Amino acid sequence: MLKHIKSSSHLPWLCIGDFNEVLHRTEHIGVQERSHAQIAGFREMVDVCGFNDLGYEGHSWTYEKKVAGGSFCRVRLDCALATPDWSVRFPLAKCKHMSAAASDHVPILPSWRSEEPRPRGKKLFRYEVIWESHAEFSNSLLESWQKEDEATTLQELQSKLKKVSSHLVRWDRNTFGHVRRELRKLKQELERLQSDPQRTGPTHAELKIREKILELNHREEIMWKQHSRILWLSAGDRNTRFFHILASRRRRRRNMIARLKKPDGQV
Image 1 (spheres, rainbow, N blue to C red):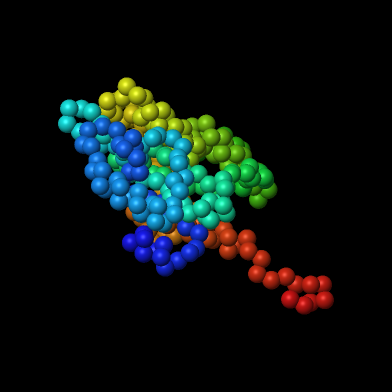
Image 2 (cartoon, rainbow, N blue to C red; image 1 turned 90 degrees about the vertical axis):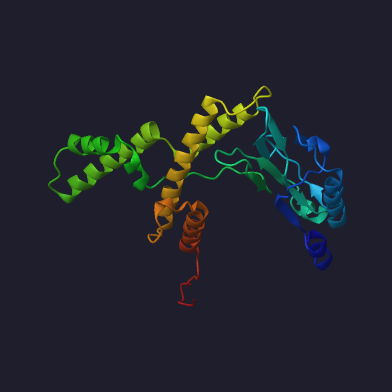
């Protein structure tokens, strides 16, 4: 199929995903030796299509399976392949092997440019529905509200709400924790544990981290659901990417300048 695509198009091409095969025998570690004919067939396709392997950062494997006897079979089945003209257009492209909590395949993340720091402006307060899942949230909010004097005017109410929102921001940072920041730390720790050359299977610490990652993934889904303002799907639908796309599209639409009006009234 890939050879057919190559023969019908000369566009720059990046092909990424689970190929279910390796380019080199050294990319298969463990029992169950791979078929030399299948490896040769995969390499032939790569040559015909003119692909180059973008390489990777992170683990040397993307698939891990426990086999009889307690040992593990680790294979690099997922990779990113690109044609030379694609690589010329994106010379900084790379592929990173992430960590997985609930799958025997790890996700692979391509990037084609260096990350530049974004200018940071004043952040608006946003009430997050996901806070309500924390056992201490209700008491903390009530305590913050009752701590301030009773508001009898709009100005006093505005001041009281501002102080309560500041308290919630601090509570989110110190108690609830930033979901994405905490996820990043846990995934780094999971990656460190999985990279231990003496590892023969998931340790108790690794299982606890996986459990926490799954919980935070659920929190993140609820967060993106709220940001996307889609109310007709339940939070348990596990469709984070859908909510993320909706939220990003809404922001782009809101920030887009459709037309400009000159001083003389001309549009």
